[in-house]
Amino acid sequence: MNKDVVKAFLSLSSFTALNHGSRIVLTLCLARLLSSDEFGTFAALLALCEILLLPASMGFASSLMRISYPLYKAQQHELLRGLKHVYLAASCLFGVIFVAAVVISFQAISPHQSAKEHVVYLLLLVPIGAIMQSQSAFLVALNKPKIGLITQQCIFELLTAGFCFLVYLIRGDLSLVEICILLFCSILCVVSYQYWLIKKMIVAGTARYQTKQWCKDSLIMLASGAGTVLVAKLDVLLVHHWFGAQGVSIFFPAVVIAGLLTILGNAANQYLKPILMANENTEQQLSELMKVVWRFNFAAILLLALLAKPLLSLYGESQLQEGFWILMLLLLGQLLLPARILASSMIKLKGNPLINLYVLLGATSVTVLMAIILKDQFGLMGVAVAFSGGFMLGALCRMVIVCTRMRLPLPVVLGLVR
Figure: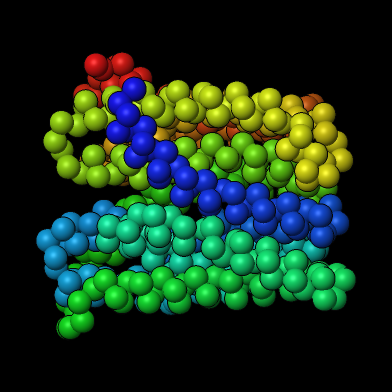
């Protein structure tokens, strides 16, 4: 393996690891401080919040890299200033209206009273969270990938965990309302810090706008990316709907642990973007990176499988054996994670982003249908089988598309080009 590629990949992985490490810290903290029903409700609300972030930003959290990177390379600071104003306005105005509609709909259809009572706090969390995600992407485009990655998730989760632990020490208990308020305060701190960093990096002056084109590009990316986020969190929401908070308290720890593989996935994604946008010696660089990603991904899956029961025990898992097999099934689907990362990034940055949406709709339809069929007979295990299989189906479809329509040789995807 190319040592320079490994070094750069591991450097980015260390920063993406902070993001998921912070998720482990936060969820472990709350799993120990809350009852299983309260923890399950929190996990469902957190999943719903993360699904809403991209649409609440009107797609700018996904599109800013594609829009702002060329502007930064050309040092067009007037347009960068205008773009900053546009994505802030989109999150503040459109985000609040969108989330209000979702909250009203959720309260109407959810059969679980606790979730219905607390979902209103998404009106606080989602719009400001959308700004945080957009500013994180903006920092990456402004050639600050490490600080962009850290402020995307890590800092606010560690702050929240610290605040929650402090309140628990002082008062001896912790409510879901207090957790939501502490989450908001943590995100507000991160957003303020990001804004200060961005302001320092863009030369002061007048702003120019291409609002119509920016919004059009963002809505296209929203159509492509929102579905991806939805599917990533859909399993937790369906488990909550079908099995209640108690089912989520069993299923969610397995999801968080399997999600540790996104450490490698996010690092590979950040490494891929400049390669795909440069269009120089692409196949050789892609192959070198994919060779590294395939090997590290397989090693990480094997390590998580060996540590599965000790990790689940940290959450106080009440049904350890069932949680163990759920985790094994979720890890099985992640074997094709490297192919999905490359194919999805190529389609998004070099092709038609809507293709990702079409694949997602097809794979998700099959996944949900499988989950409906299997849940009655196999319970949580059936849901895990459905979502693991759906993930592999989506990865294979994308890989076929980039190899046939975008003419990327299969050996490049597999990291076999010397």
